[in-house]
Length: 175
Length: 175
Image (tube, rainbow over all chains, first blue to last red; front, side, top):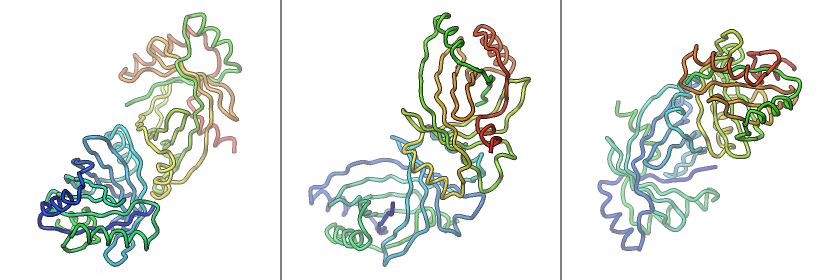
């Protein structure tokens, strides 16, 4: 499955929350996500632009593989494979036994909304600041996905700087 | 967690079923297990005596890592780490993306009983024949586990040849 999304750094999430409420949107979820990133014993994911992550929230745990990013004028596209896993501790142990190493942890509070089929996330990322992500629903082609994301961004009046960097890359760049 | 078990090749499972029934035991589960085994891009698991497996039954899917076997006079001991995963297809895809390769498939019908705390499995393995496994409950020390397995084997009057080979090794040896 391909994931298409735009990520925008914002100074403050409050104006966007107000805009979402004014348009009649309520948050679908509000969760703390604790992401552990791993590197492969076989190849360096920071060079191949892949990512392997265990994400834990108050509700569940998942394992995600992300393929190399494809930049498309500010929109980020990449393959994403995700499985829910249980329990979290055993998944981490299995990765260690297979030779994977832990590289970084990213913690954030994520509030999500559904807007015209897109997933809108308001993220407060520990050590990095506030961001908005707008992700197209799966199954859309590239052109359709980019057009939809752009329209939703306009309606929500999200101003700020786009970035195709992942939170992991931002955390690693600060070291 | 350490797994202690004995595996015995038997000609026919019917006498054991009758013995279990006579002692008042009923099968706890009867499932078809389809096991896909994978090898690491980093080291050859057939040399390091490790195993990585996705097991699917009618009920669920799990990912299991098994460490090297420690032979103890017919009883097999090894570290086992297991997580339930969902969906199965995405787990297999993630392993492929991480460079793991599929080595073999083992299919069996497994009927399980609980006898004095042990897990007794009556296995009919496609291409290999019939086997009985008696596994100690987790948390027992080595001596306790071996004594319990031996006592249950005696009570159930299981005759036949012990083997510390895994079904995977038997399948690979037939090639």
